[in-house]
Image: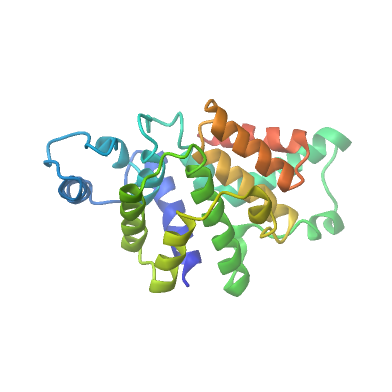
Length: 242
């Protein structure tokens, strides 16, 4: 499975989208999606409820979140900056929370128990963390219950376009159908840093003004044993990153 490759590509897409570029073949994507959905290349939406134009800025990420019917991709929902810098921002949130409590930073021993940022991991540990974050992102995107079978197939195709191997393809397809379970997701976190990253990337995907998605975030924060002030700080970092 090549989860780390897929996550890195999504983070790169997020970075490009935040800076105003898509990093994807816009015309090709529009044409391909329109054909699959039975529309024409000039149409902005389809009978499935997908707003095709809203998907172009984020490739696979745009597809994942754009599948939520009637949503704007203008930055109010998908927080590109938070995805692009998920590890650093989660670490920054921890440091900010610690400073607010103690008035100072953490010593080296405290930092050692927190776990490493996803950006600096390697090998099997990086693969595992990447899988955790992808799982968190998919569950968050599904929290409002509005991804049907056709949309699941399109999302899987977009992940495949990033270079997913067969094992990764099958895993994504399974995650799009597996019942949402915050406790099971939280058990995958292997460190406090991993827990913060999982929550932050979830915040980046959801619309916290949607009651179902706000409820999912609250369930996840509880399952991850995140103190309320830490959850709020992670949300603040996500919004600030844009």
